[in-house]
Length: 369
Image (tube, rainbow, N blue to C red; front, side, top):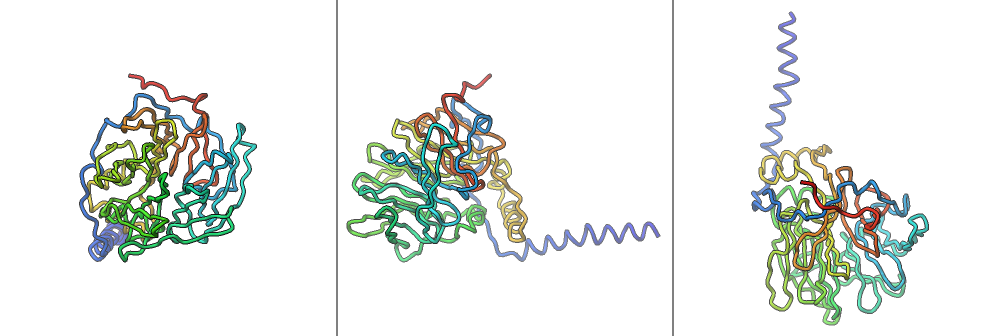
């Protein structure tokens, strides 16, 4: 009798789930592709000489409870205000002070979508890359919101992500994926196929141009200080590249990053700041498509197998040479890093506040051998 129950238990609780899992795997139509080795290869070339691995130890929190997942951060120096987009559709303004407790949060404009990238136009307008709406122009101190563009070459944007503005007024932006929406981000990356585009919009001619296509989740974009090129990020490839505007050519800016890059910001002082998160399991799955399929199937049933941890911000110079890395094993889902004065401000898609670190009090240090 014990042997009978033991065999039946083994069959129903081991063999049956295994057979069901195999059937689900075979029947599911999700078809991940092999990806270039840059997505999972080990590299030490992007590890900087200066490291701070206890970011949260000295961190301050701004706008606690008033900023719902503030993804991007743009600083308007003349008004001393931070503009950030939240998951509830609000573009909010946050006053900058020496004391984090003195910051005031203002509900400014609600786009009715999900504002992500934010930049300032040459005539004082605020340009917003809204994941669902497209590229927006907010003018008249928030009184007027205009849709600039939401498609290119007959293909609608599915995930308008980040925007940068040139001195001549031309807008450069990314559509992270023409196939998947913001709520389906994980499936775009797990599929391992290039659905991203880098584009431009000329406010004078109202023409939207596709500059580059077939990018792997085209994410952050930043204009170079000399206006000759853009730096753009491809998240799953762990790299940022240069796009030369006049020559229309591409070259690698930095690759083999210690994490998966999101936004990139220029600080006006000769440095770019690249926000990223890290995941050993994610990197392993990039190497093996079957692992990505299992992860995608699990996600469809509400089971998350991969999480971004050890997030932070990498400081690099104008040539892409790494200088300092501010991160923390306890930190996750950091999406933007921008240096304002002596502080590093970070946006995220997990918390209800902006994270700030005093770089003078908590500087990155030389690595111990």
